[in-house]
Length: 276
Image 1 (spheres, rainbow, N blue to C red):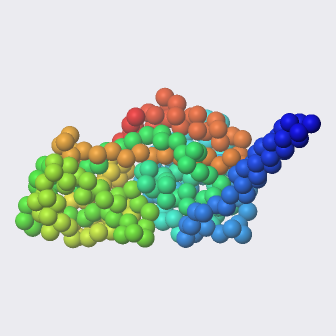
Image 2: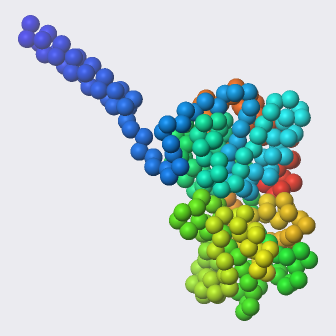
Image 3: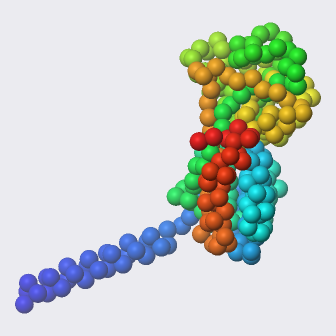
């Protein structure tokens, strides 16, 4: 009898422990602290329109894919892009997909969009960093070393700790690739603007610089205003375009993602420098 009571007590304790763990898992608070997050906004994206929200940069390739998909299927797709503060509230309510311009970019977005998490992020394409130069390359910039020459004016993109951009740290990554502090020092002396976001970087480059360290998609999207020079292989870095699909997304979203990853989708984004 005593053994039976002990066994029964052990089973009860194990059951209680399992129930407590399950309850804790369900009730674990979300500790994400995004500055744009608003708990009062209801996330209800399933309204018949596939909406993608994210930064400038990947938007141009995604718009190409969205237009082709809409023409092919009749399904309406909208790509909303730019500084996060302009679209965050709408995205929290309506986003079927949040897209990022790098891994650090999407990781930061996750702080504000609690309907997605790390497990939902899918890297889909990558692109390389290049040197954007004025049309016709009047300064005859041929590579990284030319950016170190006295008098060369360079723009770089930086988040400055307050802005979500894939450009954060890219110039330093490139300058430091060969382990030379002097390369970083010389390049820094020639930087005339640290701009928050690629849109601001592109504007500043057009107004007051000879070169802009950026991603290949920017000069390819704006061929009338910029050419580009490739970096040496030893200095070339890549970052990805990624997407995170809401669990509540419109049912058609899955088919759109399939199209984005298809051979046809790959050919479309390749025209703007995105590869696999």
